[in-house]
Length: 204
Image 1 (cartoon, helix red, strand yellow):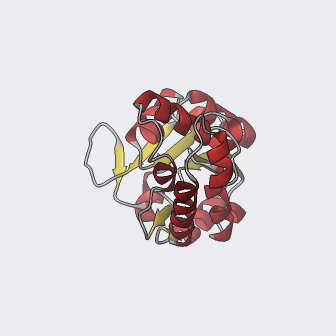
Image 2 (cartoon, one colour):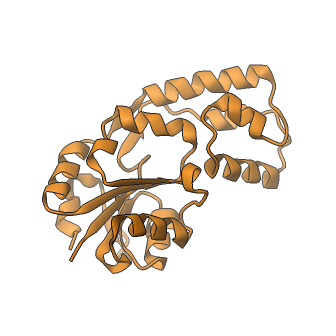
């Protein structure tokens, strides 16, 4: 029986040392209509937009040049501060050694993809499914289905691991997967861990 572990990226495997919100800065002086901003955010998360300047052209309303430059500086700081959660690489090697198929599955904009290669995560997983590349965001069941199809693993033999109750836990369970919630909470309705250190102990 082939088993798989699907892993969320930011907030689970990768953390930011400096908190920045470059896409918020990019759009800070645009029409503050909430529906419009949510629509813009979704477009950025589901389309291949490699840079913030390209993202600015992609929006319904073009941001001011000063906001584009400020957002670019924030993004550079944000990405430079990225670091892996403690024990990530040894854990991935252990799981691979035990025969688990591994995949990254994340809602993210294209500008964040290169940092994952720099941190050495891609080399240790079999597949990577990013919303900006497949046009679907968690918790849509389709993004789990695409990932499992590439791995050749049935949903009941896969476990999703992430820090978002909606996207990584409830979404995964609705798609037929098991789920592990990385959280400080203690919720008897879900498998909860403070961090990745004890992940192997809760996998089937």
